[in-house]
Amino acid sequence: MATLKAQHLAKAYKSRQVVRDVSLSIESGQIVGLLGPNGAGKTTCFYMIVGLVQADQGRVLIDEQDVSHQPMHGRARAGIGYLPQEASIFRKLSVADNIMAILETRKELDKAARRQELESLLQEFHISHIRDNLGMSLSGGERRRVEIARALATAPKFILLDEPFAGVDPISVGDIKQIIHHLKAKGIGVLITDHNVRETLDICETAYIVNDGQLIAEGDSATILANELVKEVYLGHEFRL
Image (cartoon, rainbow, N blue to C red):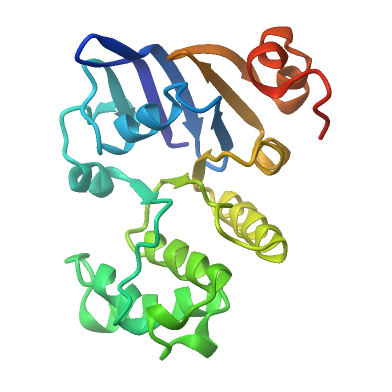
């Protein structure tokens, strides 16, 4: 079983400590949420794990291998996939070419194997019918499907989803939740950070709550909902799933 661990992460910008001593872990086939109020430090934690931001202290481990000093592409090779909040597909490339552009980086695959992997991903994410459509023509839900398929083109052990429910309609939210369950069934560990607390808590087996740069709670949704400090600083006393 693969593991992704963040241990004792800390980050300061000038004199402001935005993250202090945050640790979390994800295993193969586990769905984990990283949540908290605006400005709590959760996005910085997320970025330190994926390699967009260098931690001042702490370590990131994949299967006990320290990747803390690896750049983002090095962490990708080690098994971390990443889906940013912003649209990340190439607008002037077709759906098929968007995925193939990533498959081309996998030098262990020959041309036939890359073509086979492309067809497999198009079918798996039900996007074969839009394979020739340009990125700029896709709906929000279609774009998310293509982006997730493209993230899987690197064959990651883990995938980090930054605001996967942002900017999509309610039908597409359900669609994305199905895809996340599909990733779990494939044995991929999923870390989600999203402002949509209800949808994220609903799908996660474990959630970590960050406030003022510190971890204040962790556990399943029932544990999180029962935590008085979480109610006080984040969810409020009337929140229900």
